[in-house]
Length: 254
Image 1: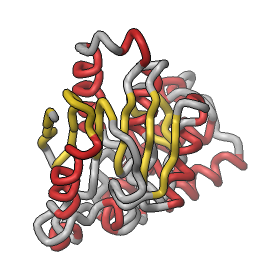
Image 2: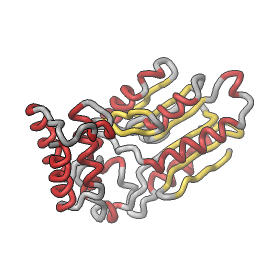
Image 3: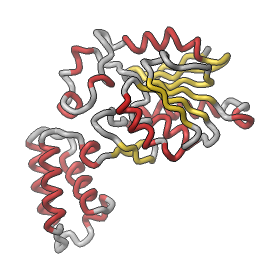
Image 4: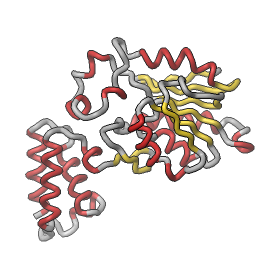
């Protein structure tokens, strides 16, 4: 029975320290069954998981027991109501990063020039491309340049931004190194965790997410400082920088 299957999986995940064992089990089962999470409880007292899918579900639970993030197992994470493809080459989008999108939209909404030609936006350290995807969805005439030092990350971003084909330019770059031109808005969620603090984080992060996208140097500010220093050269007059730096969202106007 599905309820018994979920209860067993929940207990297993709880025992190894997973923070949301029931939710994880439900998400994985719904993914295997190809349905929404609430739909797995339809006729739960009599509905059985087909044999082949049962084995797949068990294999997913085994992966989760090793603390592999659910998003990597199912291959996506929802962000700004968009299914963002994720692989171990990119960080899993966090809900708090949506605040960057919110602030960007508020800033851009104040610019009357948007009606004429659309904003030019630079997304540094794009990773999965989740911020750029949200902005491209909300601002159909935006032209966006996305950069990352990782070619594997850029490949994931290309897939997530395929819907905005023609409006996105992808550049492999160490921050501003290969970027040309000036922008109305620069957004970035750079690595900002101090090197020594990384090993103190959850196994889901330390064992599976890319260290390249986490490690901000000895005090966590290596990339933040570089962005703050160089951003003015790449901002148009009146352009703004939105920078996620730990729990804070910094906004700087040129």
